[in-house]
Amino acid sequence: MLDKKRTTLILRIIMIPIAVISTAVFPPWHGIFAWLTPLPNTVQVQVNDAIEHGLDGIIVYVDQAGHAPEFYTAGWKDRKNKIPAEPQSLFKIASIRKLYLAVAIAKLVHAKELSLDDSLAYHLPELRGTIENAETVTLKMMVQHRSGIPNFTDAPNFSWGHPPQNYEESLALVSGTPADFMPNREYQYSNTNYLLLGEILNNVLAYDHRQYIKDEILRPLGLRNTFSSLNDVNLDDVMSGYYVGIEVDLKNINFGMVATAQDVGIFLRALNTGLLLNPEEDALYSSIYAYEHTGWVLGYHSIARYHNDIDAVVIQFVNTVGDDTELTTRVVYNRIVQILRNNTNDDET
Image (cartoon, rainbow, N blue to C red; front, side, top):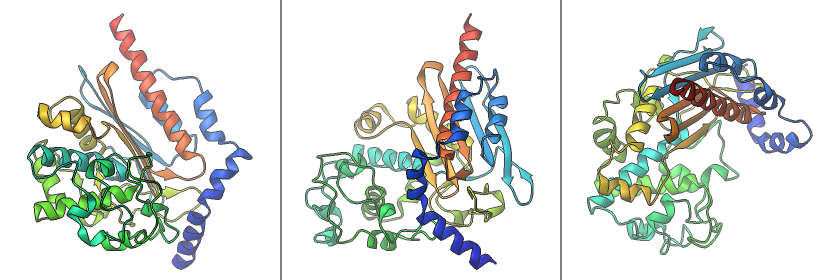
């Protein structure tokens, strides 16, 4: 039975592009209804309402100046075992990880251990002839997704259900593939950029860059619930992940960092308010990358943003992907922020 489920999963993942195209014929009703529903007065009512629009579970963390941090949850942490969503559950944060890596790069550039003008080939000479334009692609271009290096998660042989488990396997998916464009001519999001940046940091540091992130970012902020890999945690602490129409729990698939919403929120506030980087490091960081991010990995969708107008960090974790759930997730997030704005304005009047 398990093999059948895995086969169904793989087939469904292959069909995702078709599902996206089909939205022209089958509108994303859950997202539309979530948008049209009258805006409630409280975040908790909105979070509860999200479950009515096709989401299995949701965690929201709000840290607004002048208020104690608050958690809001609804739905399931584990649908099969009927375990309700828990605010301190670990969650796969996917591309939000890029913020941590960009911070590490800014700190190392400031320390003169790296230069943003260094070429890819300078640090990884073995990639000459394997990654097109390796001699002219710079670290800054990779940080900013302006390298033209193809995205390995878009490669024909990539499977979200069975992702590569190391640098070599990931790089092999795009080795020898023509560049998508000439360096610095365009912008195109590519996970390969950060795969290569991680390897460069390993070489420069002479140890795993994930340890550097732990020592220089996580520990100073007191973040004890952020981990490099699913292998570092108890699976019972991880929120289950789901794809619409598939019963199997996807949390066993190891792909990137896991963290609690609170840990991500503490990190994001520190990044946005100058508590994480000194002024020189922050100036470097602001020249190369954003101060917010979203994340998507099979079964998990996350949003991490700081809203300066209300001095609030809002982190949202949703453990359902597929069909129109991405639109629903974004609509719910935007409505939560609007509720916070309305309540802030009410407090000021």
